[in-house]
Image (tube, rainbow, N blue to C red; front, side, top):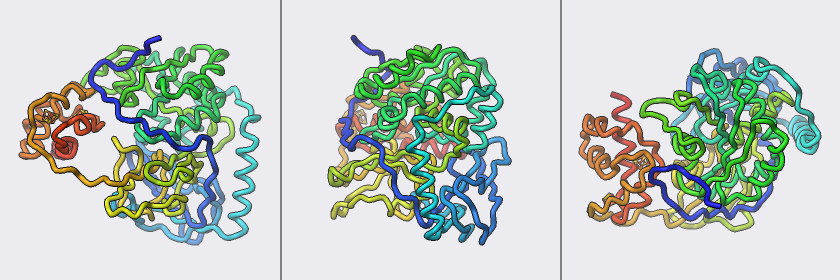
Length: 438
Ligand code: SF4
Ligand code: SF4
């Protein structure tokens, strides 16, 4: 059977999904660094002060603005500081630092273990749409595929929507956190999808999975049989299938116009991990205080793992050995759309899907453009990357805007395709940012 995919552009980088299967619990941190802004929108507002005692799961920063998300304590302990802490990009951002003592740490670990051991037997309550939306907002859930858009807002679309798409593609090379989650908790994900359908009054949901994840697709399909209106659709593996516009095209054939959002064509898209978090929040009153991350790349094979990690865990506490290579890159996320971190002191946040370590990441000498058109063929947005790169390099911002640089989804397919190894995305991103600022 030939599976469908999106219609324009796309590439086929090596999958490199070599992480060991299964999800392991990473120990809770003794010192959690919890950023106030782990989402698109205004930072959350702290409601605790230095010296306060907090319990694991307690609200520590509220979301008083329209576009924001609540933040909860990932560990029990004492608020040690409200301070600007180092983030992956090297900048400092407002955080709440919580330190755990021996007793609270052990009690948290015991409670956490009990929760995860019992999760399969936990029931799904029958609650109304308003209750679902309220609990999702209260739990501080954001899009966990990387977009970090507050989920409660997405569950209240202004446009008329008739299709919910759940993104289980995980098209980035190396990453396996969503795959592991789909294999481990298919019934809960389906229940979370049904909650999203009820909250938005949508009758049809499609869980989209690429054909390189047969186990996850089979697990979800087995549970979808008894869920009215929910189907699993297998897509032909192609990058960047997980891009919202590409996924909507692949699943429904609908095209989101330039500058519009998916609800303009009657669709909302959520990630599988978000669906699971929704189920947790609504069924068990669990806020978003931990998530699955995958650790992969050029590290020993037995260190490539999927962990359930508490938000606020410093990357330095994740067990992996960096290779002794001066050109090693530590990328947050996958190699295509991820960004390098400049420090291992930065913490896991709601949007952290994983860490990919790459050696020999030194830039190759670049050659002149040979007008081969490979970047144009690869672009899933139908842009002319070689032209946008030129505009970005020459600071021709008006020309870049006229050439629709704002439509670039920063997927990197153009740079990956270029035989002259030109850093197309670097200049395109620069032009895009400048146009946005102006
Ligand atoms: S990074 Fe932008 S310009 Fe390059 S292929 Fe992706 S969408 Fe097109
Ligand atoms: S792929 Fe590279 S060499 Fe080919 S047209 Fe694009 S920028 Fe030029």
